[in-house]
Amino acid sequence: MRKNENSFPVAVLPNILTFCNIIMGLMAIIVAAADQFTLAGLLIILGAVFDRFDGKVARKFHVTSEMGKQLDSLADVITFGIAPAITIFMLSFTELQFLGLILAITFVICGAYRLARYNILNYDNVFVGLPITVAGFLLALFALYQTKFDVHPYITAIGMLLLSYFMVCKHHIKKV
Image 1: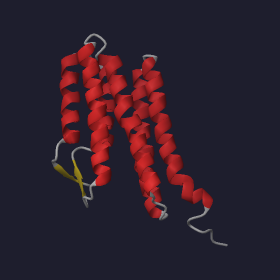
Image 2: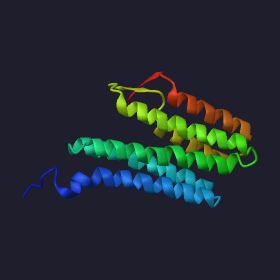
Image 3: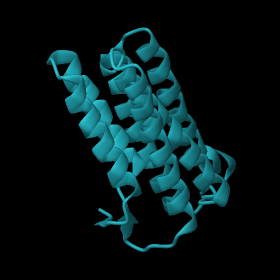
Image 4: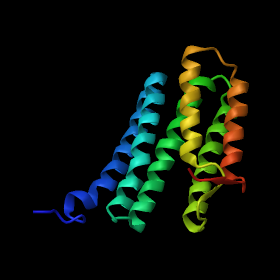
């Protein structure tokens, strides 16, 4: 007997993957607060894996919804906005204090703005600005790099500012 594609387990699978994304972001924040920056970076990257598959699964089984789209955006703010900003702040910007705080806030606000703009605009096959998932993923990779090599905080600050700008710019990036 063939199961209905929209049966209960299949219909909720995309949201379960999104919840796993949220869990990775929250865990990254918690372990970053405990100075476990390598683990925080790895959790953010694992969150990207869950984020990659939630939408694919929803489209494959025809269970996309406005609720799923909004839930995914909230997850992205946590895992690719707040978690990398806190990780980098605690890893690189504790000595910069106020400037580091401004940089972390700027990154999260730019990411949230970019997600909100993406959710209300209809662009086919292009992103407008760098997706927060990419920016957060790159910041997580940079955090992993910094745990092994000494990087001046101003280099990190410039990278974070550039990623923030690229998220809100109106440059079109082709989807892959």
